[in-house]
Amino acid sequence: MKQPTESKPNIADISVSPQGSCFVCGRENPHGLRLQFQMGKTGESSAEWSPGEFTEGFRGIVHGGIICTVLDEAMSKAVAAAGRPALTAELRVRLRRHVEPHHTFRVRGWIESCVKRLVKTQAVITDADGIEFAHAWASFLTVK
Image (cartoon, rainbow, N blue to C red; front, side):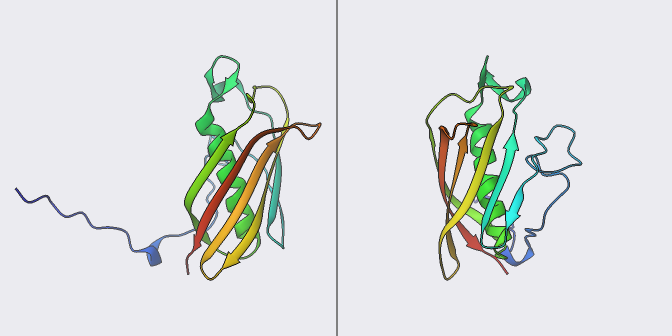
């Protein structure tokens, strides 16, 4: 039996402009994290983050998926700051320590390299002492 064909979105039709409903940084999302990133023109971003209990997976530990999402957003903001609208193509995360709710962390993302449409990035979550809790590496593909 033949499977129904699904129409795939055309990459040219995808908008990569900021959305007020973004789960990580959107001010209009009542369920979101509402991080406020500071962005540099050379391709870096940073924000302070104090996760609440609603981000927990296990009691007292922020869910790993939330951590990955925050790191992805930091790298995405770094790419956007450099004026390169792009989408995440690949993401790798190393969780080094448990991120606990009600502590303040610094989230930072930056660009490692740009070759044609491929932008390689990194991001970290650290505490006030600079101790690394999570590290991410990602590749982004620019869109027009």
